[in-house]
Every structure is written in C-alpha cells, then in structure tokens.
Image (cartoon, rainbow, N blue to C red; front, side, top):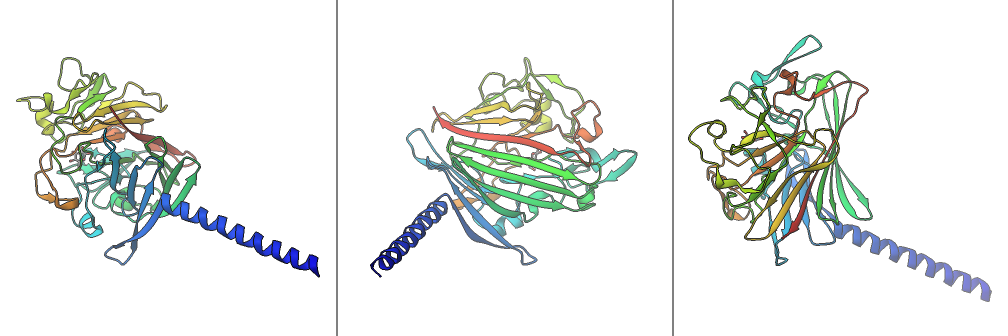
Length: 382
Ligand code: BGC
C-alpha cells in the first residue's frame, strides 16, 4: 500500500513536471512568434499578422496577405529600435492602395514588354498594367493573394512558411505553379527569404520581395543620405518604358557606379540619360556574382543612426529603385506621410523582360524542375 502511494505520488509529480515544461515551451514559442487577426479580404477570407522576434530584439511583423512585411524593428547604434520599412497599419489600406510596400512579387517581378512572351512556340498575353507593359505579375499578382501560413522553428531562428497555388492561366501565365516562400528571422539579425516553386507546364518565374527601406526610420525623411554599394560592374540600361534595351552596360564613369559606397543622392538628379528615364534610380544591376551561389549583392549605411543593411542573394540581378513615384499622397504607419524618395527598394531578381531577351539568364521553369532562390537582408550598426 505504502509503495502504491509512493508510485502514485511520483506519477502525479511526473505529470505536473512534464506539463510545466510543456507550458514553458509554449510560452517561449509565443514570445518568438505571435499570431493575431489582421482583418478580412473583400470575399471574407481571414488574414493574419504574425510577429517574429529574435534574441537581439529584432522584430518583424508579416501578414499572409501578399506576404507583406508590415514592420521591421531594428536597433540603431544606441540600441534604440526603429521601424525601417514603409507600410500601413491596417489590411484595408494595403488592399486599397499599395505601391508594393513590403510585398512578395510574382509570378514575374518587374516588367515584361507589352505583356507578351513566347514559350515553346505559344504566345502568351498578360495584362498591360504599367502603360503598355506588364508589371510585377499583373493586376492581381502574388502581392494581393492570401497565402497559407505555417510557423517553422529551429534552434536559432523563427520562421513563417507561406504557400500559394497559382492556377494554370492565372493572370495569363501558363501552368499550375506551386510556390513556397519561407521568411526566417535568425539570431544573427538576418531576415532570410527562401523561394521555391514547381510547375506542371512550362512557364516563367521571377519572384522577389519589394520592401521599401529607410534605415533612418520609415517616414522620417528621404533616403538620399544613405550610402549605397552595389557589387555590380554593369547594369541593364532601359528605354522610356523602363524595359531593358538588352545591353549590359559598364557602370564605369557614370552615376550608376556604386562599386564603392556613395550617397544615393550624390548624383541622382541628372539632366539627361538613364536617370531621366527612371526619374531617378529604377534599374537592374548585373551582379558580379552570376553563378547562383549566395553572395553579397549590396550594402547600405545610414550615417545618422549607424544602421547597416547588407543584401545577399543567389540571384543574378538587383533592382535598385529610389522611391521616385512616392509623392506625399500616401500616409503610412503612425500618420507619417511618405514624400518623394522616402524609401528605397533593393529587389533581388532575374533581369526585367528576360522572357523576351534570349541573352539574359533564363526565367523558364519546366515540369520536373524546382525553382529555388535565396535572399538575405542582414542588419548591424557602425
Ligand atoms: C519598379 C518601379 C515601380 C515600383 C513600384 C519597382 O520594382 O522598378 O518602376 O514603380 O517597383 O511598383
């Protein structure tokens, strides 16, 4: 009887300890990743907002509507956190008018001339949603769809896995395309984005992330004082519709040369040439590392806060866009107005209009192949 009591006591104690451990683990998980309702789309689909936190106080809020990074809190050189991405506070505002703040972009990041391309002898026609050209996947690209979201955890990071099935014919693109994007916030202060996709028909894919950064803090000023380095000796010059001419032109001796860090605003306003066509910087740079391995592509330093962002990618190109279409008509988070050039984008990608440029690296994806690319934005201070 005495033994029975003891075993019973031990059993109860055991159960209590295991439950307590479980509770602590849950509480810990909760700290790293929180999930809240973020509203509903017009057809009633519920949308969530996930908060990812790392061990050093970096915090990313990401919604499964468009895979948008809604906010990204990064400490400055005094340890003071600031939100370094432009965006809105509510889902409604993102749905109503979003110039791609923080979104995922697909099926095809940037422009396809006149929305036309030919694959295996078949001509496909996409929407002309940017003058006569097709931009960022069309009127309802991956930035405007609700992704399925699942938490992914490992020892040194917290992540969000987003999946989406883009049906055959969606926005005019051929093939059922099954897409997975994993956002991971690591304890090394990296926001890592891993993209994969498979198709059941030959198609084209070029996925990217369209964060508008301002390392001094979103809405607190323009980005002209940020010092930028891009590891590229060449860029792809464009025509007046911002379609590449096909040439890979040397940056040497031009305002496109960012091989050494230069303030974004130092040479941005030119009377003629490529910067006039883009209304500032809105071009694709041909990264020196073109072999598909993960390599440093760009580095940005903001002198007043000391924040540094580095961009690593497996992609051959990067679109540097200096926020030339921002004009003060948008009021974002915290009631801050986004004026001209208040944010910049560094969109890792294959080159614009590649489906019509046989000399550019191919964006064709065939059944049986897997599209995989990785981009990492890392944060530090100087
Ligand atoms: C494009 C710009 C465009 C911006 C917002 C960038 O990727 O290159 O021309 O205005 O996205 O759509």
